[in-house]
Length: 507
Image (cartoon, rainbow, N blue to C red):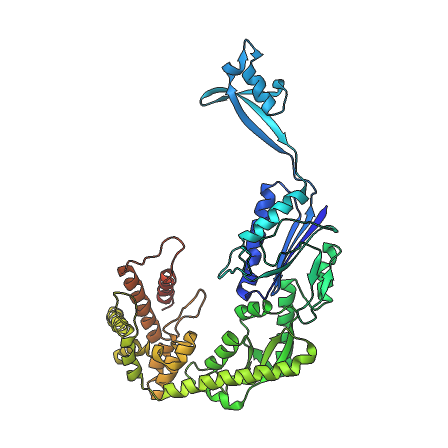
């Protein structure tokens, strides 16, 4: 059994592509190997920010023989009085078999002569040399680019390719890059070490890279990052705000993860915890640290009761540079927090009614007016739902206020900068103005559920306006003729409808 290694070395890959390419590459190589009848035991596809790696284990050196059955002339033309005619002889000759090996089979159109031809299996090395370049060129992803004078497109410029079959270089044609790529058994270390390494055989590849500060196996890298974060946060008695999405992104941003502890100034604790967390996670890829056993309110405008001034940075640098890296990241974070603080303080000076008026200048969809008009439609739908429910425990004034102000933060500076905070900041700003907690919480939660397995609104006020919001979206999009088709659903109508059903089910 043989083993094959392919490494595509590139400039820094986008994190999303580095992750998504794994499944794509694996399915493509499986399809091609099955088509070529090449047997294998195991496929490993992994990636780092600078490389995509394929390893085929338990490869046979030759593909299986292929038996091809072909249909020939009609039986009465192939045989005369039981003797083969020139037609039968010619057909047998085309298959390179003896005429006595021909068979007569009955079909819907009568009796025909059939013959079986055996195609000998090709060398796996020859097959791979034609499969691999085709696969690399067929990989897909967002914003592929060309570079130099070459014609090939890829996520980022390809700089080297290692192709090794057992202990031999498996060459193939890949001359569309600029500069040209020479297929070799050479790989590269961590960027900051910047050494060219020679791979003698695929078995030593991962250990060779590890000795040169590259953990090439993605799963191993992910587990190390998670372990570093958990151990450090436990020693500080803090809780890491680490989502699966952020963990995946961090995994695809580093080749040799190291944890650095940073701190920010207490002056920023008067910002909402969601603002601090969003800046750290979404914009800087840091790991915020939450205080344990502390009560959390979605309406708090400060975060001193919820979050620590300590945060984690997952670094790809050298250990001796950690102090400089920490200072650099703290400086960047201070600037980002200062911007966020300015936005929040500016928003506090604007009343909710004034922000609502600004919605008149924000377009919705062509033919469907502006956001202010959309809010008016949400109000009307809310009134109809309220009338239908006839729930005496609900205050009509409050629920109408929730509907009226549900989109008021779309014209706030903080949401313009951080769109993921819409709704959340609207509720906080209303609380700051003195609106009742039911109204504020209803506005903060009316986007829920925004994705599969997301939480539902905790109050009936938020639940009813959430239904009204989603129903308005469904009706408006259908009226405009932009209905979902097949897998295409750009306005997330299916998600909105599922949200309505989940809320109704949970009421």
